[in-house]
Image (cartoon, rainbow over all chains, first blue to last red; front, side, top):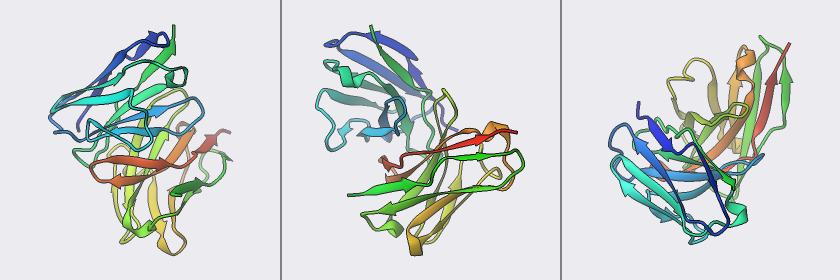
Length: 107
Length: 119
């Protein structure tokens, strides 16, 4: 099975900050990686797919990069509505594993 | 609008059976895989399995193989997740989601079904 490890698990930041979350795969997954945002009590929402393609309607302050085993999600200028938990997911194999999540909190 | 609507919250006793549902609308239900994802209280997302309603091809995560059954009734655009004998450890929120593409990801998601198993 392909394992995904996100870092950090918790992140405290302020409105306006630039933040980066990393997702590392236990083996190469090309660019078959998605990022989701989940707010408390809500279903996850697809933000980015194919490592760097923004899903329709997602603000441009979100960006993704990487390929192979290392990927990043960057939020260029945090807004109040961005405080949530973020998950990566690999789609290289049909065992669509998720990372353990990164909780982004207000400092 | 593409939408997945899940059945309501359930409270069950250990050993009981359960089948929850996920109804798709606004798109060709038989043309996209539907997946199920578990989220235990305070924990992360776990992918359980997927089904292609067009031909009922089903694939399970090894962690959930034999523990649950995923099915679909394409005549009513509905996918199902069922248990034959619930355990307390099955207490969780369960989400269905459309697999937009095998290599893209899940979008959209249903609103979730909370399953509580307690004696």
